[in-house]
Structure formats: structure tokens, C-alpha cells
Image (tube, rainbow, N blue to C red; front, top):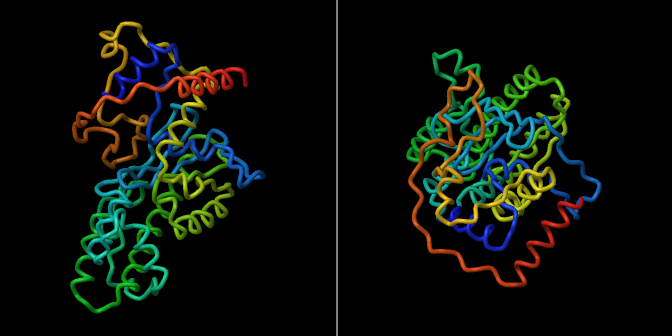
Length: 314
């Protein structure tokens, strides 16, 4: 419904039509100028991306817009999904629960119950998996449930230890992904960490240490943009417009379905042969039917055309 409406609006008002990818938008928003940090640099292609959110967990070599190689993916849960599920086990009822769990963890000892909380993939006999870039959080979630049921430790200590296990796993896998990416492309100078979980301060500080160790510059979106789907998609569109990567919509409404293929999820790019995790961009539930969006006002149309014209000029 949304794609068809966008095509019809673009044709009706003679506007450029830009195809964007949700996960690419997460990573590219780190290239958006931030008025609050005028001197900050932005990542230049190629770079390594760690995408961490409630629905995705991927390590990616980003060569350019629309040019990505998936080095690692999740075998089961994403880190954001795991955070939210464990938050509920700790009687945190906020949605999402991850930010509240992070606050609770700041009050605890991250080593209090480390020996009793399973390390992801530590016991796997699959050496390719053990030494790869794929992620797994399902076992950690189960181990955390058992720890909570045992009632031996305080909630802050359990939250802190859980967060440490998650972040250590991300760092280990991201570090290996950087090594793989550098073997594929020696020009990498930047590490991007994006997605909702990139707002977690422990994740950021740990990734900063990793980037320094690897000789890279870390780039994270401002925390307010980690979950701002509107801004990130708009910026992705601007990046495409600047490169002339847009299309003219078909005039006939009946041509819309032939003009673009729509899937509930779309692959971000090809997978490295060593990647064994499930493809976060395939399958998924069917999109639910939503009401038709309202027609844009004259003022909104003028603003859209003004921005599009400025982007073409620059």
C-alpha cells in the first residue's frame, strides 16, 4: 500500500522517486552533518558497519550506496530483541525495555555472576561458526532466565552481567568482521555502529576501544537518531538524489505493480561465503494492509520540490 501510494504521488506531482533500504538508512545517517558537532568527520566508503537493533544484527562491508557484503548475521535472536526479552524477565515493563535495562545495569557489578551466565557460542563444536562473524543470543537469553529463576543475585548485578556478555560478543564478532573486511578491501578507515542498540553507552564505549585497536574511526548516529526512522530514510534519499540515483514514476497507476517488486523484507546485499547466520532480510511476516496516506498539502509539495531542486543543484 505504501509503495503504491508513493509511486502514484510521485507521478501525480512530478516528484523524483527514490528507492531506500531501511538498514542502509540506519548506517548512512551517520554521514548526515550534525549541527551540534560541526567538527565531526563522517564515514567515507568503504567502511565496516555493525547493525544492531531489535530486528537485525549484522556485520557488513559497506562499499557504497546499495553495495554491501554481509559478513555476519544472527543465528537466532538479534541483540535488541534479546535485551527486550530479558528486560521483561527482570520485570521491566517499559517498551522497549532495553534502555531501562541499561540504566539498571549501570547500578550493578558486571562480573557478579559472569561464571554462571553462558558465553554465546562458547560450546559450539562447529569451528567455522566459532571462528566466524555470526551472532547468537538465544542461549544467553535462556541462561539469563535460569539465573533469574535461581534468585541468587540482585537485578542490577544480573542486568550488568548480561549486558557485558552481550557487548563482549558484539565486540568479538565485530573485530573479526573488521579483519575480514580489511582482507577484502584495504582502504577501510571507518567503523559505523548503527541501529537502536547503538544508543547504548556501553556498546559505544566498547566499540570506541575496538575501533582504536584496529586503527579506525568510530561513527555512531546521535542517540536521538538511532531510532528516528523518518530522518534516516530522508537522509538516505538525499544521498541518492545527490548521486542522481532516482527514477521517474510511471504515469499509469496500473503500472505501479510492474514498476517495483515489493517484499516484506529485502536483502541488504550478497553474503560472504563464510556467513552462516539467517538472512535478516528474507522472509518475515506479510505486510498488513494500512490506510491510504493523505494527499500532501500545497505547502508540503512546495517544500519537497524545493529540497529536491537544491539537492540536484548541489
